Length: 173
Image (cartoon, rainbow, N blue to C red; front, side, top):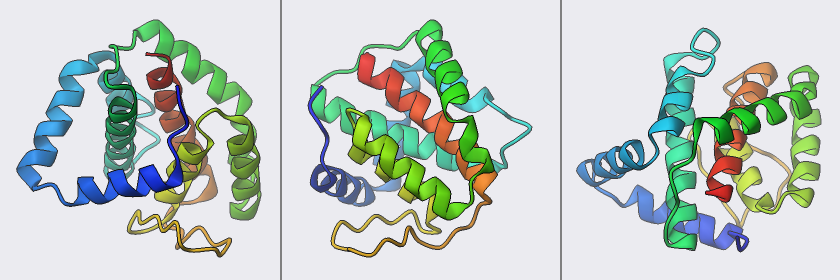
């Protein structure tokens, strides 16, 4: 799969922000219909660990990723429970260290992961989005700041693992 660049991410997010609520809800329904196993995973994973706001953010970012990948590839096949399970287990094991990092340590680790991941710009987008209060991403911002933190590092790490697992399975679909 070709790289989805920061410029494409920003363009796609701007398009999504311009959708009416009805159009956005229709897109979410399409995601739920086309990706039932992924939807179940996103709604069930760590129910006891995430607040409703966190769960909404996880689902929202995942739908946005699906939309961007679908737009880039033209179609995204339904992912299986097995694919999701493999990605979740793999990411939970490899990224467990993130829960022990502070914000700066997480940011550095995600930057390194992004250099090695085939969709590194999307990994950065995920982390920036879950870190910022408004979920804004600004490609023109050259600072190293990731935005106002509203979640604790451990919460960010758990959300990142779930959303990265979603990304990894969608890339393979």
